[in-house]
Image 1: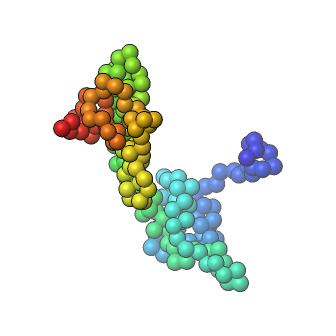
Image 2: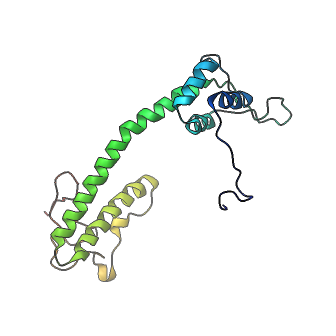
Image 3: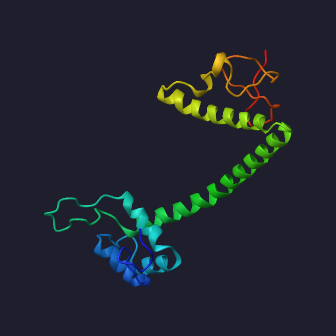
Length: 189
């Protein structure tokens, strides 16, 4: 990728909704379920690139000898508008959840670091265990060896140190007190 304005990039002037509709029509998008005027109104209120990105989900004519080569097959603008609206609603639903999860994880990480006191390696060990559990979920599904069953030198847990809470053995266990809801607690019996 080059700098803006070099020969590797093309400067394209912004186009209004009517030329956007013509562009879509030239690519084989039909306007039977939604007329062109309604499509222009939708494009004035939406992002053309998100609408165009939805078109990638649809098939095109692939035979080079066909007069329709490269055009979309049975694609109406109404389908693109519906997918664009669904994308918007999904984003409105998922984004707040993702932000809440991120906040909770940062608070939990901060708690682990504070609980570790003068020994930040204990907090690091908990993070390694959390990652090992995530890796183990994928490994079980794919039939790979489990990360949590890896032993360090002398058969010791690679992140556990003498005096840590919990059973000694092959499986990694948290050293810090359990926190409700995060799933770190394991039975010590």
